[in-house]
Amino acid sequence: MKKILITGGDGQLSKQLFLELSNNFEVISLSKKDLNITDKKNVKSILSKYNPEIVINSAAYTNVDGCETNSKLAYDVNANAINNFKDFFNGLFIQISTDYVFDGENGPYNESSKTNPLGIYGKSKLHGEEIVRDNFKNHLIIRTNVLFGGKSKANFLAWVIESLLLKKEINVVDDQYNNPVSVYDLSKTIHNLIYAESRGIIHVGSDTLCSRFEFANMIANCWNLNNNYIKPISTEDLSRKIKNYLAPRPLKSGLISLNEYLPILSLKNSLKNIKNQKN
Ligand SMILES: NC(=O)c1ccc[n+]([C@@H]2O[C@H](COP(=O)([O-])OP(=O)(O)OC[C@H]3O[C@@H](n4cnc5c(N)ncnc54)[C@H](OP(=O)(O)O)[C@@H]3O)[C@@H](O)[C@H]2O)c1
Image 1 (spheres, rainbow, N blue to C red):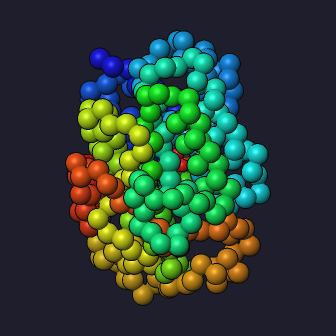
Image 2 (tube, protein in one colour):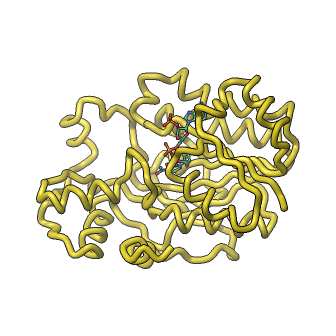
């Protein structure tokens, strides 16, 4: 059985990846406390202890506004830490990346689209991609956008449902466009990409390009909740309203793939499946 090491084991994607891949692989998933990827000695000792054939680097500093005020940490975690693997690992390195490597001028973007990150998060993630490309002959870079459905602190789906259940008004941006992906669909797709021995860059997005406001309404509709509490707001107005809403966001974003073998991921069905807990 092939061995896979997953980094950032407490993250929303890593938790689901662990469950998804454990059926067919021996999976070691380590949280930051057991594997801090910025610590080279720690990385070396974990790689020599487990000797994995595949590393999935899902660890990241994902607070896009935090990245603006703490750019050193952003570059250390999202980019430079990848260098810590290169001397001790020569298997398949899978890097999870983001649509924030694009500027959001004319999305959705495919794998050949020109990158142009706006903020530190996107810039550090793009630099991470470059380090992966330059140092691991055997690599797969999976870019995705607006993950939902996992168990994490920053969980859009749970926030919308909880707020509407509490009849609490929420402001949701109506000018940021993406095609959100459930962690269940993304994990299954990564599983398939490993089997298909895919390499290079792959974009994973769902079939529905929508604004965050439209997505919140889809959630309300699926959960039969009153959507009157969802109020549209522009990114500009929200950034004036919230003090630490600092990072520039790509507005017209979203990810499409030139790879015709990728399955179509239905956003509506993903929501239904999560609601019915049939994953
Ligand atoms: N969430 C999205 O909408 C989205 C969209 C596109 C791409 N992505 C990418 O998808 C991947 C997974 O995202 P996610 O939503 O699952 O993020 P997440 O829930 O924030 O998980 C990231 C994990 O990485 C850990 N981490 C941070 N610094 C670390 C370090 N130095 N060493 C080891 N672990 C460290 C975090 O631990 P602490 O919390 O304890 O710091 C956290 O558990 C990331 O690469 C992200 O850039 C996410």
